[in-house]
Image 1: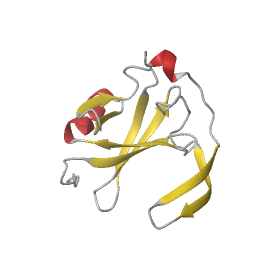
Image 2 (image 1 turned 30 degrees about the horizontal axis):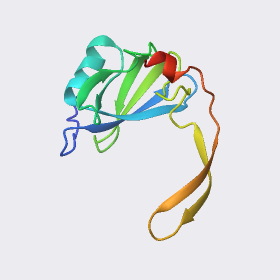
Image 3 (image 1 turned 90 degrees about the horizontal axis):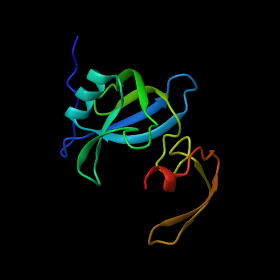
Image 4 (image 1 turned 180 degrees about the horizontal axis):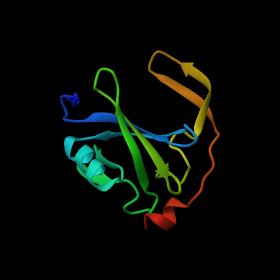
Length: 132
């Protein structure tokens, strides 16, 4: 059985990285066809950086790689789930997960919303030392 992944108009598909053991969602990124292919070939998570406009391997600079156990596709074939073994922190800010903040309150003033947040995740590395 095969499935055609529905890459968006920008050629990308959202890819959620989830810790394969704990079930914690550690990050959301985007994958291009090449990123999906490289992930499959190497067993290491690859994504497409929209800001840098380039393919990147998670952890190539920091050493905090994601070893991919399985890639799942959702029912509409327009999102991926990478089940990973995360080495070190997943977030470029040094936290274990990119989802390290919890919204405490929201103030919507018609021009957008601002949120009061608290940190719920642990910082596991100093990004200033890693990304010099």
